[in-house]
Length: 200
Image (cartoon, rainbow, N blue to C red):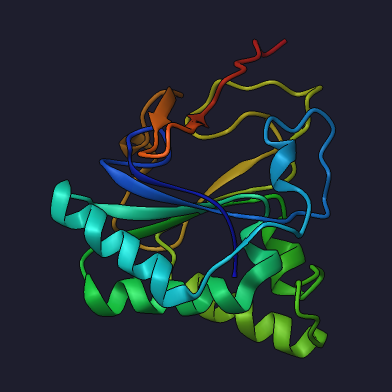
């Protein structure tokens, strides 16, 4: 899988303390996306077990309640995403799983999305069903700079927070936050919601 970044502990990307996996690559190119460096399908190629190991190591340092998948576009690497979700749930069955995707639920359900490795519509529908089965929540829909929002986890009003399990209710999702993580290498990772619009 192509990895953009891994944040071992965040409170800005879903309920509680969570690791965040940023997938590298997105062909949606939402105008004014705050993370354009994650768009190209070039970068750090890692194995799913390597990323799962990072989650395990982060869990030993902090009491993580879950993992959130972002990007880039996680569903454009749906095969790796599904494998990673299964591996995390295998080693930590109680954690919650969330995702940010620029696709709508209708697009995913009908297989109207692209994958890095290429696949048939039928296979894409299967992948989404399997991913959805493991998700507790997802923020869905393209970022639209003309519809600024301040709702939890959503940067534009067209985006929807979908709850796929009974683990959470809407009130469990707190206000938008911004975090900066400094990696051992000295690189910094900005996560959360760095530009808050004001709804009209």
